[in-house]
Image (cartoon, rainbow, N blue to C red; front, side, top):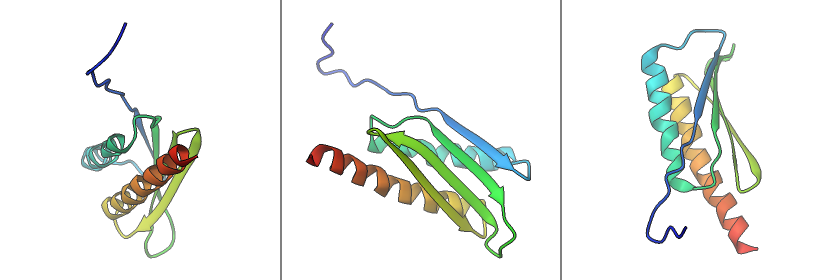
Length: 108
C-alpha cells in the first residue's frame, strides 16, 4: 500500500533511571520534554535511555543519554551542578552527534 504524502510518526520510548536518589516528577517531566526533541533530528532514532546519578565531585549531577541511530550506538555523558543543566547540555550534544552520524551514513 503506497504511503505517498504521508509522514509516519515514529514513537520513541524514553526510559529514565535515577541512581542513588528518587527523581521528582518535575525533573522527570523536564527530561521527557527535552529528550523528546531528539526525534526531530532522525527518523531512525531508537529508544533513548536516560540515566541520572549523583557523583562526589562539585558538579555532582551526572546525566547519561544512550540511543541507537543508523546502526550506531550513541552515548553522551555530562556533569553539571544541576540535573537540568546536565540534561540540556547532553541533549544539545546528542543532537549534534545524531546529525553527524546521519551525514556520515548518507555520504558513503
